[in-house]
Image (cartoon, rainbow, N blue to C red):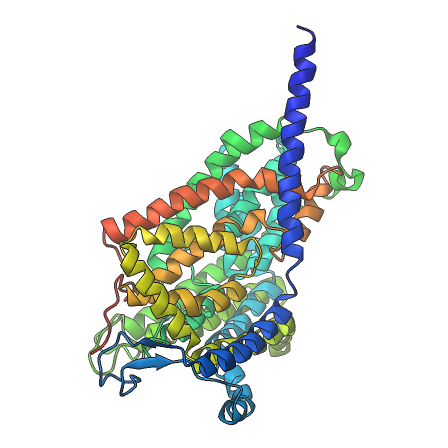
Amino acid sequence: MSELPATTDEHTQVKRNAFTRFLDGVEWLGNLLPHPVTLFALLAAGIVLLSGLLGWMGVAVEDPRPLGAKGVAEDGMIRAISLMDGDGVRRIFTGLVDNFTGFAPLGVVLVAMLGVGVAEKSGLLSAAVRAMVLGAPKHLVTVAIVFAGIISNTASEVGYVVLIPLAGAIFYALGRHPLAGMAAAFAGVSGGYSANLLIGTIDPLLAGITQEAARLIDPEYTVVATANWYFMVASTFLITIIGSLVTIYIVEPKLGAYNSEDADPTILDDRMMDEVSPVERKGLRWAGIALLGVLAFMALTLVPEWGILRNPESGDRIDSPFFDGFVVWILIFFVTLGYAYGRVVGTMKTDRDVIDAMAAALSSLGLYIVLVFFAAQFVAFFGWTNLGAITAVTGANFLVETGMTGPAVFFLFILLCAVINLSLGSASAQWAVTAPIFVPMLMLIGYSPEAIQAAYRIGDSTTNIITPMMSYFGLILAWATRYDKNLGVGTLIAMMLPYSMFFMFFWSIFFYLWTFVLGIPVGPGSPTYYTMPG
């Protein structure tokens, strides 16, 4: 009998080693991918070469749109167009700059970041996160941390840089395992990336990419930043509940009691537990007053019959300049609240402070701008060559022939997006690659781009927390090793895996029930189904 414990330990160790090897394999495969900028450059070049081959072969498919509709060829066929002949090369050279400057996500992200930069530089976002978490009753700390993580997605860097290490310090101070606190925050910030009460910078970015992809089928289609807002708000509470329960009943018991001997000695004195100071609280109160002013101003432009941002022709509130230009409200919102807060605490004294904050925010986007340049070329080439439309029609025909056209197809789509996300961690980079394929494909079998985008965001979010390819994964690992110097990549992934599994399962079901059973739109003015024009 005395052999049994050792045998059990050996068996457990073998399983752990096998799991670690699996995780190491995932990491190794992910590291084989080039930098996202290089990846888009290669994809763009690949599209050019492939278009030459398919154009020479005369590849074509039947256009599902009716003859006479805008953009439909006289013979009703969609043909592969080569970019390797004279016309193609000239089009590349003359269109390169316009592809970049006309890429829909670029402008909206730059404008939104002007506002977010002011709110961040003033200290508003940091103070708001600390007030939300530190002010919560102890028995609701876990819920508050997950919820704060989700809300921090409005400016995601704040969640990663401030909230996650703060959550570890809070749990440690309460006598709980600090890694469980960090896991709860990480789950909220990154696992719940597509749930929020507010519209953030990622919303106009993804909407712009979705719109570009939808226009491969419908050149006039428009996707607004609020396309998924209703579903995002409801998902905020779902993810908060799931994330809190997984932390309390799975992750924390598995971690057990914390042994401070494994910690970096300096972490015990560096807990980031600073209470919100009186002047910061005063700043938050004035920011709240500013918030009421902004909301009142927004209401005046939309609610009254004479509202200047209602549709000037129909008077409609949804199909209106108010939502079409919602990124401007993001700018106004963050600049106003950030400045109000900064004036009180002394971080925003003159217009130069506001300008410096905006400049700092944009200076941090250097890599993103480079990425957008190559992503814009890829998306444009994909449209010019008709390869996106051909792929979409071929895929849609396959789904029709196999009978996979019902709403259940979204379960497969969400799972596929989650798997792709393991190797391509950037939400915008992944969507820029996959949207030109999946958006037209699912549009052709009757689903709207807005619903497709909402489903994509579930798949993308749920595996953010278990992929080393996520841009902040290394930072989270560095923070975690301060509490456990022996912590490795496999341990961190294993700790976050339960969140990923439960988020994926329940969020997918919730999307299906919300969209197809209850028939609730995913956002204001967002249809669930799509009908071909004409």
